[in-house]
Length: 261
Image (cartoon, rainbow, N blue to C red; front, side, top):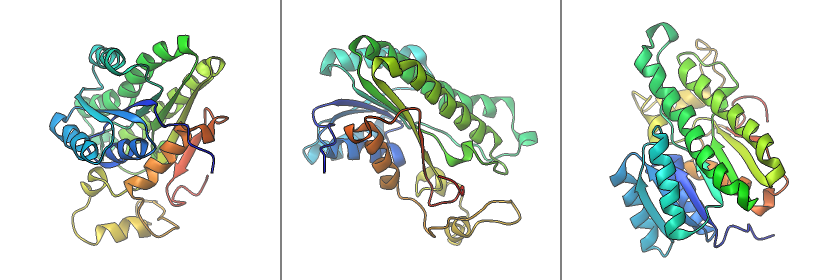
């Protein structure tokens, strides 16, 4: 198999304290990349870094709120001052909203977009400004299959992920001439703290897999939830040289739940 080309490269991952973000950090580090995990949960992301560093990986942690453009830009500048050019950026940080539109207040709507959409903009813009003169780099955004399929009680979340998805693809068009690739991984239901926060009893996992006719939600044809590592593997592929001719693409990793590729 052709080498991934990630060994020795420097990557930055947001939302790295748990779930998909932590799995992406581990997967990139396993490919030989140096990785800086960013998260608003400083203790959580430090624990991830400590665990991986103990195993020989080159990983650091930083406490950053992706909603704060100045803080993100400062973090990117500090990382490059300390470790060199960032060649891979992965947007994973996200928050969930499960209220219906009429029950969603202004603050909840704003919070979801601030993290899920503006956070993607903040990191991507900071990295793009540095990658363009170097004429190399890869950006990957972890979106959601909900960005393309209506979901009951998830209008804010789905809309924020749809915005982040199209933003990333538009950015890919703008950066293609500089040799910089921008792609999206769209997970479905994945065994993460975010997913499990919606469960109320032990049968809920089976319900997610089966789907709900009452809520017009299809189940998962592969009959299993994704694990965070399944999503991380897709991110690593798109970040790697094996995907060197792929940009502006959306890779759906949902076990067939959205009934399209």
